[in-house]
Image 1 (cartoon, rainbow, N blue to C red):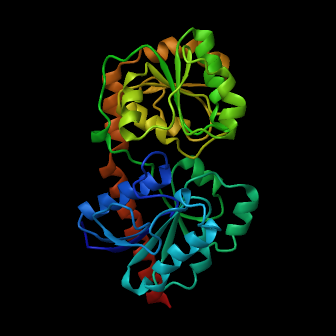
Image 2 (tube, helix red, strand yellow; image 1 turned 90 degrees about the vertical axis):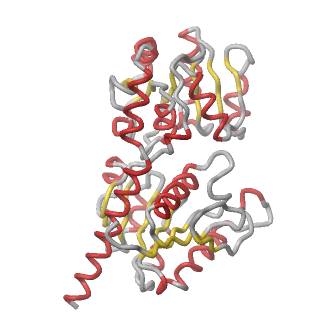
Image 3 (spheres, helix red, strand yellow; image 1 turned 90 degrees about the horizontal axis):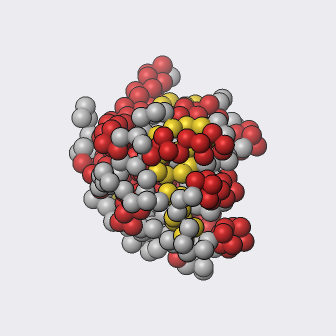
Length: 350
C-alpha cells in the first residue's frame, strides 16, 4: 500500500451488505469494502444498520426497503444514504458510489469537496447516457470493456472486472447429472432458452432464482419437478452446492449484460459454462478453457457435450487466477490513486 486512503463506500440500501441471497451489487460492494479494509485503508460503509462489515458502518436506515413495504419511495432512501456521505465528504479522500439503478451521485459531483467516483452495474440506455453526459467530468469505473464501450463519452478512469471470493466456492471434480440455470427470471436472461436446451439434450435442468411474475406466467408451466426442477432462490451455500453439482451452467442470455457474475461463480466451483455471445461474455469466459461461447442457440445445443467435457480443474484454476478478490482490490486502489493524482494536478494548475 502506497498510502492509507480514507474511503467512503456507498452501498444500495435495498438489503443488507452482504446480501442474504441475491444481490450482485450488494455482494460486490461487500467484497470490495472488506478487501480495502484488509489492505489497511480507512473505509466507512454507508449501508443499512443490519449490515455486517469490518469497516466503519454508517447507517441511517435500520434495514432495507426490500424488506419493508413502508419504505417508499425507495429513491429517497437511496438519496439520503448518499447525502449522509456527502455531508461529511471533508472526512474522506474520495467517495465511491455503487449505482444499483442509476448514478444519482452525479447530482453531487460539483458540490462535494471529495471526488465522487461512480460504478454502474447495468447497461445504460441512450436516454440515460444523454442525461449523464451533462456531467462529463464525473469519473466512472466500468465493470467491463463492454460497459466502457456503452458509456462512450463519459469520463471512464478505469475498467475493473468483478472479483469472486474463490475460497468460499468449493471445487467439485465429479458433478451430478444436471444442467443449471441461475439468475433472475426475465426474458433477457434466457431461462426459456435454457429449458429448450435441456429438453433437446434430454438432461435435467435445475432453475434457481426468486419467484416473480415472469416465473409464474412464463416459466412455471414448464416445471414438472422431474426434468425441469425449480429450486427457489439460493443463498451462498446453496449456490455453491448447485454450481458444484452441475455438469454445466447454461447462460443463453438474450440481452447483453455488462458482466455476468454467475459465470465467474460457477467457474470458481470448476463448473464450465455454455453461453451465448452477448455483452461481456467473452471477457468473462475463456472460450475453450472455462466454457464455450456460441453465436446462436442451435450451436449451443450442439456444443453442450463439449462444454461438459472440459477439464474442471482447469476451469477452477483459471477462475481463481482471473477473478480473485486481490486482483479486483488492486485495480480499484490503482484507480483511486489515479483519480486523486489527477485532482491534485488540477489544483496545482488552478
